[in-house]
Image 1 (tube, helix red, strand yellow):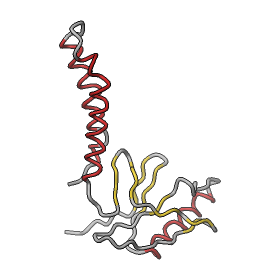
Image 2 (cartoon, one colour):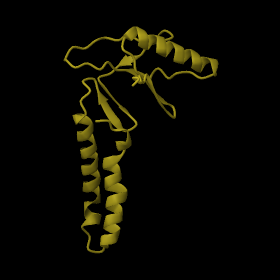
Image 3 (tube, one colour):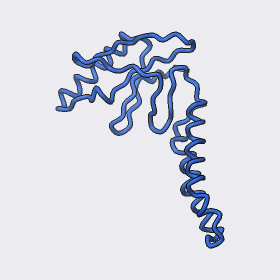
Length: 143
């Protein structure tokens, strides 16, 4: 069986590049930036981030540039609704989703507890708003 190595995720105007070294990542960023320029586009350096996945507490600097501009290195970011952290742990993503569900639940409390609202309407709101908020992005979850 052959191993499949994914180095790039593309969705609409969002891209994620994966590399095993800073040098490899810089080559990929330079190539992508060059391709954009040839098509009359430009990468937005302010929206572009770098994150190094590491198992321990040490922080490895990864100095990646587009042209002469340094890309910001972050400890976490959200991509397609999922929160990624430098340690690869999904607990903060789960906590963020539960908190979002709790906020929606709190906002809907008076509506959901009103005697004027039918059970059918409550169920429709529960499925359409609360469950949707909790499950947003779950199609991309990997365990």
